Amino acid sequence: KRIVVLISGNGSNLQALLDQSAAGLLGGDVVAVVSNKADAYGLERARMAGTATAVLPSKDYAERDSFDAALMAQIDSYTPDLVVLAGFMRILTPGFVRHYQGRMINIHPSLLPKYQGLHTHKRAIEAGDSEHGCSVHFVTEELDGGPVALQARVPIFAGDDEAAVAERVQVQEHAIYPLVVRWFCDGRLVMQQGSAFLDGTLL
Ligand code: GRF
Image 1 (cartoon, protein in one colour):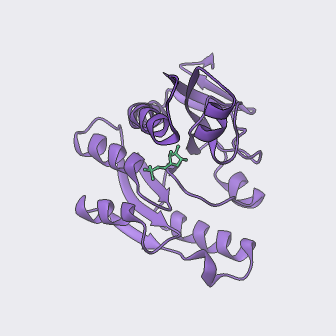
Image 2: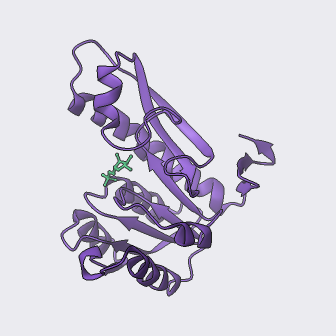
């Protein structure tokens, strides 16, 4: 299977995918990494892994639609089976999302449906939550609202700051994202009529 990863920054999740891919454990190959930021460190990670990269700075496009059209053309030039959003900090247009319906996934740093949007760790701490985590979900037109494939939970301890919680969550992100990608590549995970199924069982 052919996988294209979209990033905007550090790319630690990308690294986890590249490592599993190199080990032959991903069920597919990361064929390209596309960033909307030229200085994203994840681009360096891709180059070190010998993976093709492309940069599309969103500031080069006046309209959201024209950026998304260019992004779509770039992604489709790699003929991906799966598009993986890994810290891609852009809200995508409905047309873009529809085009990749059922073959685009995202990782979000909360136990969805809790804490959609930004600053999830801070919000979980401020709410006094004793647990937090991350979710891998199919991307639908509702931001952070698509069906969840897998979640991992972590504790929040008294006195934890944002950085401590973020680090604990990221360890789990790096574990669950490659696993979900593998399920998809092996044909075990599908989205049908807005729901996610693993081996035919509704998640
Ligand atoms: C992760 O925390 C992920 O949950 C969120 O963006 C962050 C990306 O981190 N969507 P990285 O670039 O993979 O290190």
